[in-house]
Image (cartoon, rainbow, N blue to C red; front, side, top):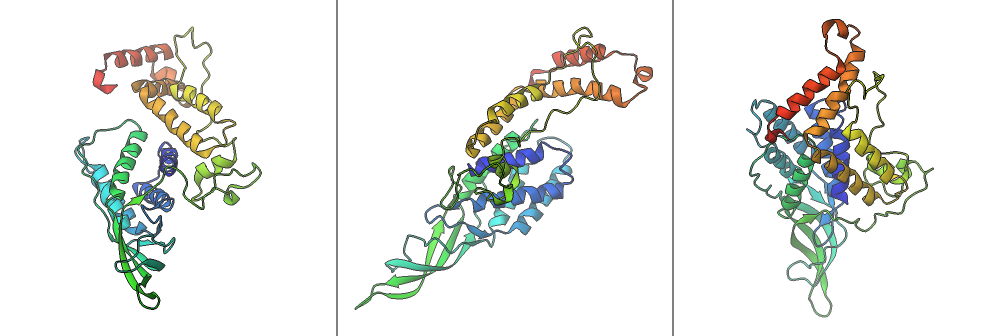
Amino acid sequence: MSWNMFKVNMLLYMNNPIGVVSPAQYAIKLATEYDSCMRRGGQLIGKESVMVGNLGLMTTLLSVAHAKAITKTQPGKHKFLADAGKAVEGYWTGATMMPFPIYPIPAPGSIQNLILNSGMVTNPGKWPSVPFEIPMKSCLPFLEAFVMFAKIHLFTVQGMFMTTSLYPSAPAPIPAPGLVNWQAYTIPDVPMFGISLNQSSTTETPTTSKFNPDGGITAELANNDSLLPINDKPKPLFTYSNPKQEGLDTTNTDDLLNDELRDSLKGDSVLSSKLIKILNNERKKDLTGFERFYSDAIKSIGDFKNLQPDTEKQFKKSLSELQNELQKEKDNCCVDCD
């Protein structure tokens, strides 16, 4: 569930181009969401979560990755996911771990660990090799690819715990310092201990909700069915007098799927179920391919006509003629574009 929360939070942010002011802001958002996701997980065996990650280094390396990508003039000539992987490795460089719960595997020579004095990451891991990258039409494929590589990377992270452990001795065991190595970090699909999925009342504010590990719209969504993770339908700037008579198709794929998502979310009080529905809805939009962006282009015709009062003087074409040209261009488009 935690990875789904990461994807939904990033998807809501990336699907709003106006909100992404600059690459530096996007780098901060991605690093912050990754850090929040890591805090919802723990070491593979002992379940100790990360205490302090190197957010500064990760943000800097993500900014470098963006600068490198912007300089490339041909699609697919750079591996942004590989550069993002270096930023993730930067996050784990010098990271420290929570000293609880007690690591269950005793330090070498001891019979039991009493206290974890400190925990650290000694090896930031290795980001998997990225075979190739292709231009994408939507945000979700990038996020799912990022999560896939991130899951693999976490199994390569290594560290150690400085412990106070019990060592065999007569007549009784004695405590002494110890050291135990650990490997692999995991983000579970179900909440770990200490995180409750019991929903609060709708009158409770998001900041006081029982399930609010990192804030964001997903935490608010858990407590408020009226708050949906999709924008309301924008009011049209131009109203068609008789669309069918003019030969216009005003159906918008995103609007139809968003209506379907709104209906399915109402009355659903399980946060994990809502996250899955949001992601599945985005996948349906991606499956429409070029149709998704074609319907947006048709809808924007009316907006443009309304924003430009002298459109009729500049362009002698009717709306139906403009749509027919768009349809013709679409029909002539190569199969690869879909």
